[in-house]
Image 1 (spheres, rainbow, N blue to C red):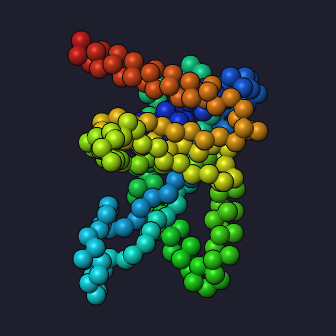
Image 2: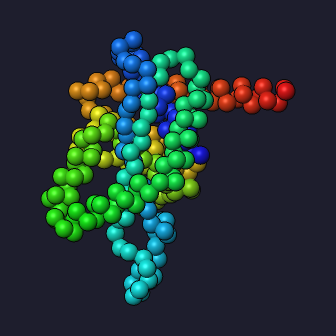
Image 3: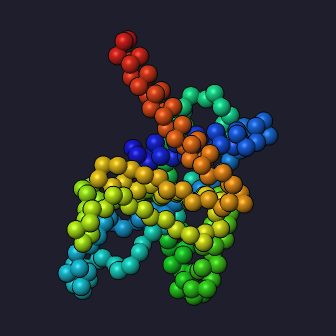
Length: 219
């Protein structure tokens, strides 16, 4: 899926970036933990307002999301590019089978109900402080749109003020997907290099996939 490829690109790109910044200084398999918000509604997407207004509709108002901790591991250059995607798929598939998102939502809901918003905010802040990056994948409009007769060239979605070294959002629009990167400049002073590492990783994976497909056809 697109999430497997996205996370594989992030894993490979970060390893490549760390190789540039600190060659031979990091241990193989160093763990870097990311955070993702997941929608845990049974009915994904926008809900019809008339159904929300009905009593006992079973559809709740407001956001309903949980948190997932997504570990990636540093690997030195020379590894098979597709191995990052395979590891990402294995990890994401295992996460889908857990109740981590539901438990995190329930815990947050209980803290909010019992102790109030201040303690709930502190809890979320502590969770974010113990992870390195945030990542999300947002599905945008499948067709081009206009606002006041002005065509929309692209869409951007991002967050700020998070105590993270790196925040990444991928958003699709009219058959195209763009990744937006927000960094803490004191930790990642060269975001252009990081973006280039992500780009090179994606191109390497594409080339490896085409080569693998060609080899299978020849056999």
